[in-house]
Length: 246
View 1 (cartoon, rainbow, N blue to C red):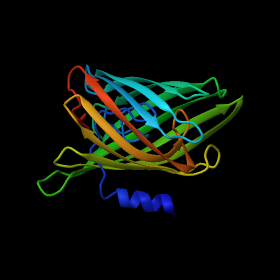
View 2: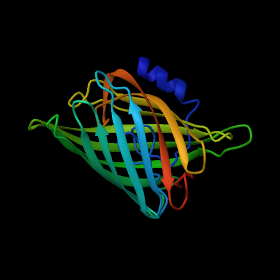
View 3: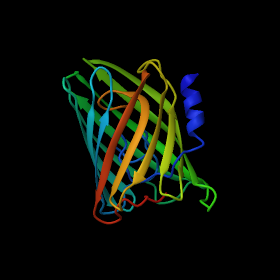
View 4: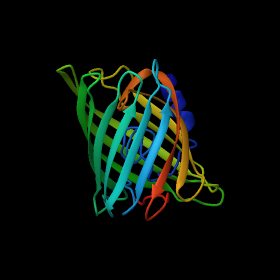
């Protein structure tokens, strides 16, 4: 399948996760979370232009590191005909599970213009797959499970899906990531996939560009369309735009 081929190509380039808000809100990859959390005291603000058809989307996000293992976030997505908002929280367990850091999280989303709302609960583990060296990037991977309920005009469906991501951080500070989420016929037309590249211009300013088939003001569901997005994130407070630890 085309999506799996694109994902396979991207896996050779994938990146180490920064404390960067996803298009859906929590810190992580393009749209899917990892076990990393925002550093304590850091406030991250992010804005992207998301080329959704037939209307573009501008998701504005903030995420704050409340403590060593806990972050809170919010999102407001702007479209010409419909707007949406969401709130999210993620907690990283203080003790690793084997070689992996594990986090649990939840988000609530609402789009009154579409008469759509719902929530998602997830658990995700992230672990180092290969240490960085002068010749090779550092590699890490994430594996998670989420439950999502989507209510449109009073008609509700829910789905449980598995998701995964791989990421790599290069010596020149460029990072590239790929993610995949299994399909549920009850809530979406296709399995979700994305690729994203990020580069820190300064200690506090990071830019990203990528492609995803995730759709909607809150991109939690896969479609048959591929959309390009680009944006920046600015970090205030302790830690700058440094990577959050697993």
